[in-house]
Length: 68
Image (tube, rainbow, N blue to C red; front, side, top):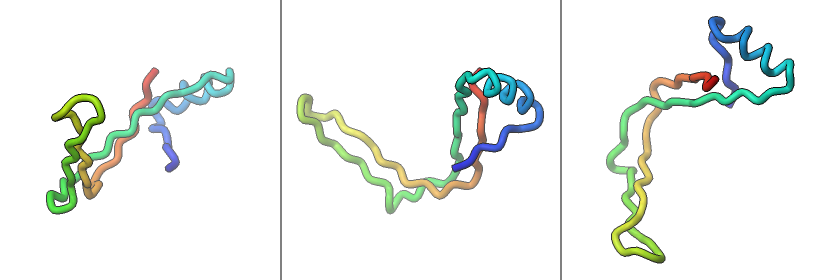
């Protein structure tokens, strides 16, 4: 995936990268949950009842946010 910076922050990001600094980018996905394909895993090797949810989403919007 390639993140393209909005023009409003591009200069600041390029300046930081020019100094050899890293730039953190947060990626937000928004979409519709596909309930038939989303799975709830309930397993743990240490504590019963702990697990994770693996949501399956059809992405509709992708936003990139610069984390200064």
